[in-house]
Image 1 (cartoon, one colour):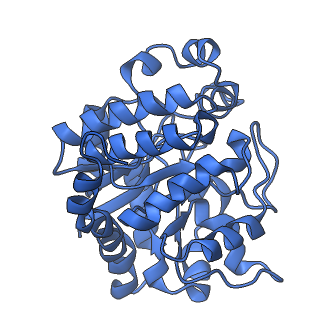
Image 2: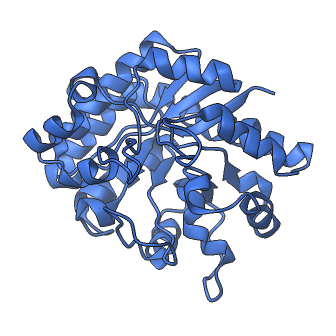
Amino acid sequence: MGLIDCHVHLYPPVINRDPAGWAGRHGEPHWAQLCTRRRKDGHPVQSFPSPGALLRAMDAAGVERAVLQGWYWEQPENCATQNRFYAKCVSRHTDRLSAFATLHPRAGPDAVRDEVRRSVDAGLVGLGELSPHSQGYAMDDPGFLAALDLAAQWGLPVNLHVTDPRSRPYPGRIETPLADFARLAAAFPAVTFILAHWGGLGPLQPGIEPAPANVLYDTAASPLMYDETIWRRFLQAVPAGRVLFGSDFPLNLYPRIDAEANLTRLVAELHRAGLDAATLRAMVQENPRRVLAAARAHRPAITRRTAPGTR
């Protein structure tokens, strides 16, 4: 069964050559804290592979397609840099890679709209991974709402970073109140929201209202936070049609075992989870195909709307 991994990160070569130095020069201290530090054993928390290295890791793990998620950068210009890089990745590997665009509302509503249009015209099919709480803007920021309006019109799924409120402290941890996401999803019922990292386990926590039907969840970084029972526990509470397989590659998910990211090990964990065939197929094939198809179905309308001189 070929899998679709809905949560993968890549960075342009200029970042890969000197991640910490680049972050210092470009105003990205939060990203540096999360992604360039080393663990107590001296190993880095993640690697910085090229697209070719990602494709080789996908081949080894039996992943047929990866969805590249942008980062929740603190500077709008860095969002644009990553979006351009992803457009090149997708154009060169259309059969293996899809990509979401990232943004920062501080650029202003008009600039955000232009960035989303440019990204979609270049082949990107969603927005994310975004994190209002980490990027320092409110859920009702005009630029953010402008992006969500376009997502609603064009069928663009939106991936949002979520922190489990009961998770242990770690460098760079940001609180993301779960109620904020529920209100957002209710305000934009036409948008498919994907809450990353099992949605902070909102569906398993007492006192949390059930999320609206337009909310999905991905499994990114699961082994760093939860043991292998999480697959069955979560899917006992949430229908299989609302869960997407995601790895968070190239984050090292098994630092006690591996020196760097090992996508094959996560796929093996998924298969050990004891999920029935229909549930597994929904998570790794049917659900991501449905989500990606929604944006593709809107592409003719998007192209007409983004002709020169139009808004």
